[in-house]
Length: 315
Image (cartoon, rainbow, N blue to C red):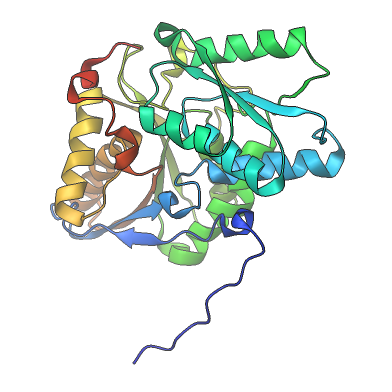
C-alpha cells in the first residue's frame, strides 16, 4: 500500500495556487518511445489555468507595497484566463475587479468572471488582445484615481510567479532529466520566468517558445509577436528558439490528446503539445532520448461555447 500523505489545509482559495501535477504522455508520444514527454497540468489551479500564478503574485505584491488599496478597482485587459484568475483572487481577497476583453472571447469565460462579481468591458473583437490593451490604457488614463492597473504585459511580478513557482516545480519533478521546456507566448510571462529559472540549472535546458504561425489565427491567448504589441516583460534572450504553429494543428492536437490520454485541454495547449511532440520526435531520431516538459494552460471545456466554425475565425 502507498503511504498516505495528509491533505493540505488552506486558509483560502489563494493558497491553492501552484504545486500542479505533471503527467507523462506515453500514448500521445508513442512514436518517440525513448523520450519522456510531460504535461504540467496548470488547469489544476483553483481558477482553472496557468494564469492563476501571475494574478496571485501581481495582486499580493501590489497589496504589499500599497499600489492596490480598498478604494481602487483592479482593472486589466485579458483574453480570458487572467480575467478568471483576477476575478477569483479579487473575490477571495475582497477587492473589486473590472476586465477589458475582446467581445468574442468564449462565453464560458464571460460567465465565469461574472460569477465572481466582476465588471466586464468589451473591446473590438477584430482588434484581438491588442485592442483590449489599448482600451484599458485609455480608461486608466482618464481615471487614474479610480483604478489599480497591474498591466500583466508589463508587470515584473508576472514572470516572477513562474521563476519562483513553475520553474522550481518542474526541476523538483524531473530534475536533471529535463532537456527541453516548451511554452506558448501570450503575455510571455510563463516562458520568460520559467526559462530564466531553468537556464540557471547546472545542466543545459533548451527553452522553446510557441506562437501562431501567422498574424490572423484562432489560437486564443497566444500572440504572433512580429505583428503584435510585444509585452514589456518579454525577454527575447530567454527562448533558444521560437516555433510557429498553425491554428489547425493546435486545435487538432488538443482533440488528439483528449482521445489518447484522457486530458481535455484548450487550443493553446494543443499548440504547445504539437511543438513538444515535434521536438520529442527529433530527439528520438537524432539522440535516442530526452525529456520534454510543456504546459497545459487550461481545460478544453472553456471552449465549448464557440462553435467549431470559429476554428477559422480571423482575429
